[in-house]
Length: 526
Image 1: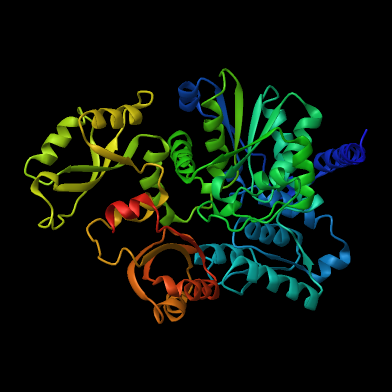
Image 2 (image 1 turned 180 degrees about the vertical axis):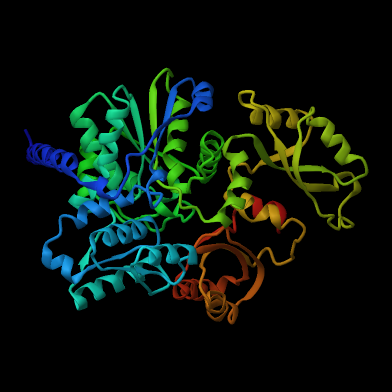
């Protein structure tokens, strides 16, 4: 046996020992002083559609509409008298803040929650309603977290970590205890992953009591810190995280949680924003509950699993929370048909002549057009026989297998030039709302997507840093109720200015990615 194998064996034995400790802590966790045992709801329509028995574990039924209450309370009841006297503190803009605030109120402990100034008022008000002291500091979670550490040291407060803590993990593990009591014959459990507290707590319990149960973690594709850690063999930082599923937008998996997950979790599935939106719709149609994006994550993973599984299994997804910002619903409604694969988004070239649109509609063979964007372009310098219009079109698909492929093949056989943008984020988020303008600066124009923090002065900072030095050639802003808005911006940048431009981008310190070579941009905006 090599030295590396010996070390791995020693670590495995240590984790097994820890597993027994966690099992005891989960069984003894007094979370029901404040939490409730949540329902296991059968999803009958989805079960029929996916040829499996599908259940939803309803953590939206907690007093704070999230499982986070369990871990926060279990941590607080294990504090010393001295720690309780000085109070607790945490940095959070989401469910951990509300869970900790209610748990502290129940136990008579003073709680301080540090939140970024970008936090929506509804979340701030909810935390204050539970009696916590809210301090709005910084423009990002990292700044709020740094401030919480400084307050903790200065005021001798105990920091309550949202996931990477033994007592927090054990508290979250009580979800698994209920699940086995409610449905002991479960085959596969799908659990959302942010920092890993819920997955670690549930996995360590389930696998020790019934090793045959398959435990699968589910991550958002743009926040897959567990997948990155598994590939590296240790926790690593993501360069950036997506913010749609903000409840799981974590850059680095926890140290304690990773060790347990690595040992007890069977697999990890990642899902797209569109797939999450589809699951939010499915949950609503079955339960009339509006899940938050992170809450629907596990059902999205379950549905992806069913695409390749043999069927006839008992599957459980954890609905981890339902603290939805109302303004996000518009965005979800737009995206869920794409997630259900009921709509194709295409760029199609048609002749720039009368009757072309009618002929194209006939070529769709009865399919419904959901969107049609077109702007006449001056083609006077082009030979009449090659004058073409470039249209952006959405087409509703049937439930027939591979209908999107059949549609594109049929159109190509009828001599239409097509580009499929159904999976193109830039096209779906920005370009579909911008059809109609082209410029003559394409050789010098650079296109970037930004995440703008939603606080006063964010646009002014952008303009001060970049607008004073470079001509802004394009600007499109969208916000769907998140703490960050999505911005597409174009700049006139000459080759000799490249290094200077990227230095200004670094000084701006907003999340960004370049999209100059994106086909959707080139098809409609250059």
